[in-house]
Length: 199
Image 1 (cartoon, one colour):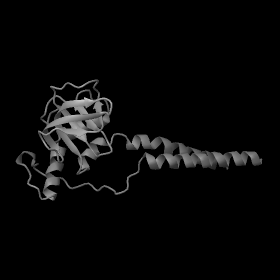
Image 2: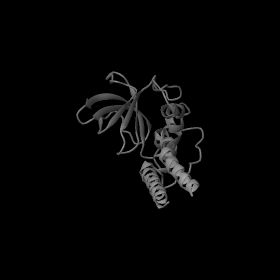
Image 3: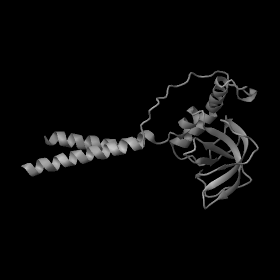
């Protein structure tokens, strides 16, 4: 009986630990596969420190419905390995959806085939850099425009468009793993204490 209880406790512990490694670093893939994601080069116009909003001026589009050369405000932003912005510099900017922040990162240039993201320390931003260098975002943008019957600008037409990768409609996230892990751990602990008291 103790082996069963220990096994259930171990399963509960694994359920609490596994989501961090499974869910971490999905931003590059979310940007690549979401038709609503935006990826562009832009300049910082202003930052409101009280509300954490930022106004940017997109100068070149990589992916998504980005209006170039028109100021746009984002309610949340996150600097990637920077303490402050240089208003004269062009940054790589990524925006997945209205619930997430606008990610802003320094880059070595605007040619996606050989740009480097400044201060890459980790798999997530390194993966984004690799996808950019392999022109995967341009390919996805050409596919998105082709499927929407919009004219494809000649500068982003890839030589070959890969087959779309299936994405499930239901995605596990921390909001499912954590309560389930806590429930299993609580039930295991409860059963364990009840069994010890009955002896």
